Image 1 (cartoon, rainbow, N blue to C red):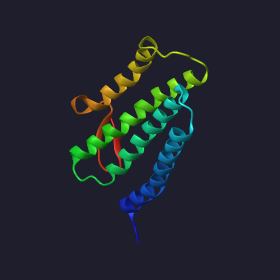
Image 2: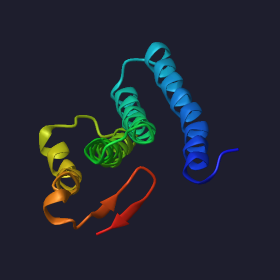
Image 3: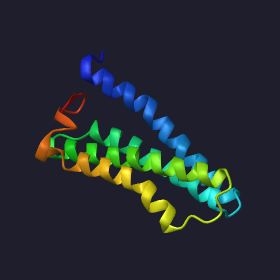
Image 4: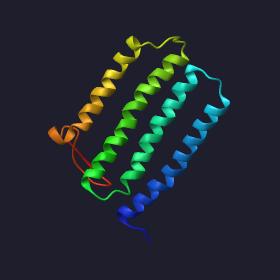
Length: 140
């Protein structure tokens, strides 16, 4: 019988693994069957950002050291920060924005980059997370 954290890890793996598989199958289907367009590229970018997040959560359940746990949190939040940007660009493409130049994309990427920089430098200031382990987070 699974108890406590082992049960939590099992349930997370039980739900996240099929979700990751479904995301990757959908992404592959869109890449193989869809027309080559900017909308398809933005959709695949959203799927890849979610896949990075899910993969990092699954990796965190298997890591054993505090340094590796922290690295999986950094990888997890890379997917989270990129997903917001990818979803915004997907929405702009869907609504008809023709050309996405660097003058449009870079200002949109600045908030995500700043948030990710705050997360990566967290061991210096502990504003984001005070303490982490495999199953829980103490906010800073």
